[in-house]
Length: 323
Image (cartoon, rainbow, N blue to C red; front, side, top):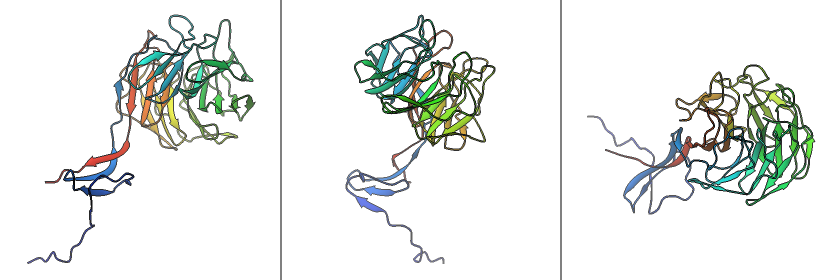
């Protein structure tokens, strides 16, 4: 006969209410609900339909989070100054930009956003505008007028990089809430690229040097850009980004046609998600984080007002089923 008396496992904590700050992998028994629970990764990795924008447009700027998003500018059917705010369910009109423009970059929060550069009639602009949750005011001017650039960071500590003047540029500029100063150039001049991160930990990916597309990914340390050995799995331009330098999301874009491709970045490589945006599009606005992102507008064609919400892998309390 086999003796089991010497076998001993881990004791399971018995509590009357779930722990306020559990750690990943922790297991406990809730004596109030009579349930065995644990704190573990929940993998969703999917887009869901959100509320439609009030005005369909492409080449617009985005900022904020999935539940407090901000979009502004763009084109469709004309160059726009319109601003809209998202509450996680629907869009409402905000204060208009002082100057209508498309190809504008955005970063920051819904209550502290930045609109950077872009194309006004009749050409590119150096204009920067700051949003306070109600209205836009003029900020410091970019050193280089350009459109189709990317941005990262917050209103008082932002990064603008790449873009188009009369050709693709590698220019990087840093904003302190008042003025722009020159930063280190991208290794790969390009426009219509994606961006994420902060001023001292930025991420640039995709875009076009002017002919074809690039998958190139670069990381910024506050002084200079370093090329990553591997780039996006799907080379494209006109894509959007969300997240930070070590946990980012790239979605949408254009190869030879608009795509819905979605890829997650872990700080060193990109992983393609099996399913992408329901509405394939380029020149799309993005906001949020790697696990909670927002995609708004873009070109399908035609221009679209579609909004989608991304839910990625997250750590959460799960009920453990036993039998």
